[in-house]
View 1 (tube, rainbow, N blue to C red):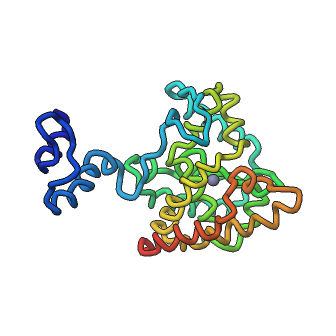
View 2 (view 1 turned 90 degrees about the horizontal axis):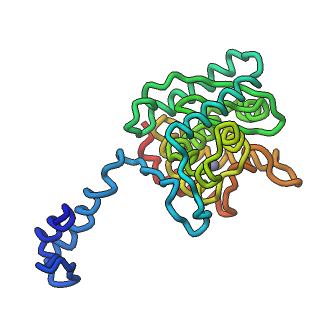
View 3 (view 1 turned 180 degrees about the vertical axis):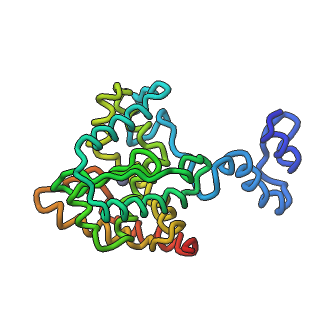
Length: 271
Ligand SMILES: [Zn+2]
């Protein structure tokens, strides 16, 4: 009998034929069942961290024709995307780079991840040319901003943290793998372009907001700044439609309420 079955039998919930009954349980047992299933499933993830979607999980809003990337294919696409950004990087503006690196490092070290790559990540940051505000994090604490984004966030560390935490949350939730899978697992030369340019699906945006807020709070940044960050992007996007970061991260119309709800939930995590 499975571990779940043994727990259910111990709670008096399962008969000798293996069927699960729905009544006759003492109240205490009914109360214990969710905790038992938590022990079997969700608690394998580090506290506070969603384990992230499988690239092949069927979802009603995403195509189900996904093809799993080969081993190393996601990392190769992420690395190649970083190399392309590095080739475009502007000559170092040391104070600006140091500030971005400090923020990225704080967020990565605060990440509630079992992967030591996050806690030990040495920040690598770039500023690349670009009139459209945009940002990418392609490995723990390895992030790039366009010059327009760097200027937009130059005066407020919490706004900068909001941009980087959102990107890091996509990375932690393994969205790169899912995006590549949904695109048919292209070769890294194509996958790198997709990761830099293609918009995220709204499902990804929905999934990422809670973790991004948590990263900010754990790193000591007020997570409510995420509302100000996305609001700051709106005037830049203009009447002709969203550009840059706002185009690649399409939020639902009710995004301010959703961001605030996530932010308030994690406020107690602020050091
Ligand atoms: Zn996003």
